[in-house]
Figure: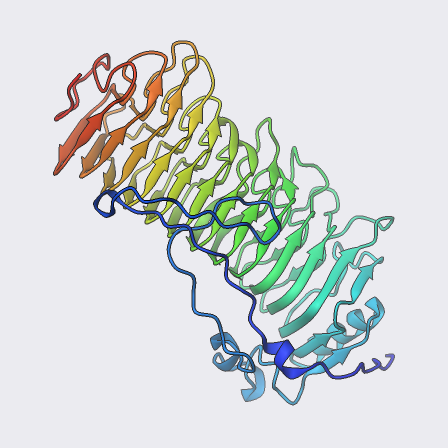
Length: 468
């Protein structure tokens, strides 16, 4: 085995300097007044909307993050700490990086520091990946480096985390990964019982062999994945253009998911969840799909202090589509999303709770389309609850389209509105505010006014506390 050359040791303060958190966009509830939304530019220039709430406190220079200090790994060493005696500096050579990972897998893991601003261009396909499969606790501090697949190389993803593998990546760019035929996870694949943490990582322009058949242009997760202060941009795949979560657990914090493209004919979302997913203080914007432009949920999805803006779905759920399972949406902003058929902002064929959230300026474009802001279609014994929220300025302008603000269909479930404001919504046919073809219950202060052509009249069933 060849000896890895050692590059000059990086400046310690730079190695530990934190990445800046994205600026927040306030999402005020009905009790907090209208307020002006604060727009923040994205890290990559793609997302024009900031996310709701306040960002996390940044780390002080020279100190590792909490994840670096805790979580002891193999042989009593701290997993992921770049202050450990066993850290290894890797010269600017892709072969040196491959050799270092082979060594760490054979020696119970360790920590690598890459050459500053180096581009590691991978050319060899190692069983579907450009780098050796991760089977031990390994941390890589990228130092601003890029890992990419060579333009003329065979198809392969970049990282594969196997069972027992525990990979931490920091301050690194991953780009141009492309899976071999019939495989998924263009940049990263995490197997069941594997684990990954991305901190200040850019996952850009990765894809799969066929976006009509293969999922997860960026990250395929069957284990546990944490994404912090990172960007997924320009990735493509069938379901989950950026991230697909299959039966695993994903947490996305202070991050940006932007300009990813799922198959526009039948692909689901930039973020596809079939496990447990939490999105906190993040922005999901300008993504394209057939259904669920921003996120599609089939299990448990929790969204807090986040913004879904300017996403597009050719059919249903421009911003969010929760098709099964459950959705918890709090203190967030759903703005400017578009769907062709139902639910320009949010499409809800499954139970959901929406609290202190603004759903504004979303659109359904098709003829006979419904629910410019929110579309509700839950079954017997199920409910969608919306509390302390505002549904403002949404539209269903297509010929015979209705329910500019909210459309409720008659499937036997209930929509419960508590302290909700529905105003300034527009549709071609009545009702423009709340078009109720099912069951709506109202509690507290309800304000359904200034909708066109009517507030609630024209729907099959009345809406309590709504007039005109």
